[in-house]
Amino acid sequence: MPPKRPFGVTLLQWLVLLLSAWGIIRFLAAIRWWAVLIEFGAWPGPFYLAITGIAWAVVGVLLLWGFTRRKAWSQRAVLTALTVWQIEIWMERAAHQSPTQNLPFAVTVSLLLAGVIIVTTLHRSTRYYLTRSEEHEQPDKHPKTA
Image (cartoon, rainbow, N blue to C red; front, side, top):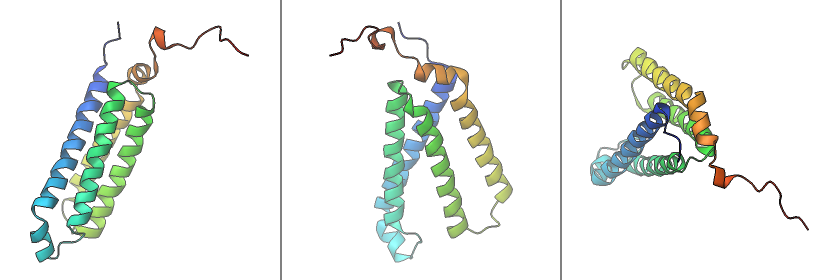
C-alpha cells in the first residue's frame, strides 16, 4: 500500500495546477484578443503571450504528472520552474510595467510564494515521498551478470 501523500505534496500540486490554469488562460486570452493586441501595439505582443502561456501549461502538466507518479526529478523540476517563473515575472515587470506600481506588494508576494514553495519542496516528508520507491521497484539484490 503506497504511503499517504503528505500535505506539502498536495500543496505543491495545487500550486502547479494554478500555474497550469494561469498558462492556459494566458494562452486563450492571447488567441482571443490577438487582433486587439495587434491593433493597439501591445508590447510584447500576442505571440509572446501565447507562447509563454502554453509553455507554462505544458510545464505544469509535466510537473503534475511527476508528482502523481512520484518521480524524484519533480522536486528539482519544481525549483527550476520556480526560478524561471520568477525571472520571467520580474523581467516582464521591469520591461513592460511602470516601476512605481505597488513594488513593495509585488516583492512581498514573490518572496512569500517562493519561500513557501522552497520550504515545502525541500521538506523531509516531500523528499521522502518523492524519492522512496515501492518494494517491487527495488533493484534485484542478486543480478545475473555474464
